[in-house]
Length: 139
Image 1 (cartoon, one colour):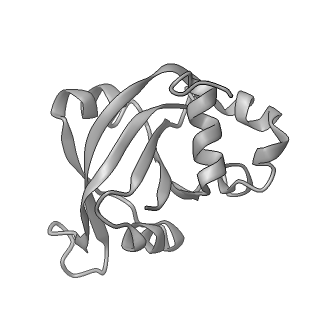
Image 2 (cartoon, rainbow, N blue to C red):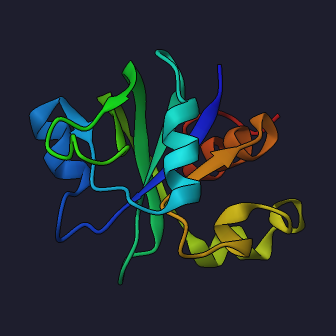
């Protein structure tokens, strides 16, 4: 399974909204590289939901329940969307400032390409954020 970080502006659609709705169509992604990442997603892929804007923090987990398909609201373009299902909120959000302090994240696209809204993650980065959030123990 692949892992991705999905950025959302919490004033537009927050983790609270996803938690309330339980599932949603992840749409509105127009950047070419972000679309390439959306198109590579598969059912079961694991997702970290990240609040951008003023918050700048990873706040919870979700997963893909329907792989990429053409956005029904933009049929004239090649935009893809996926359906996602909420998993759980982090016990403790992980801030961008905390991520930046860890040398292990030096090559993480969240830091290298800060405007990218869909960021692929290595297993190591994914697990480290889970540890930082208190979701899994640090062994």
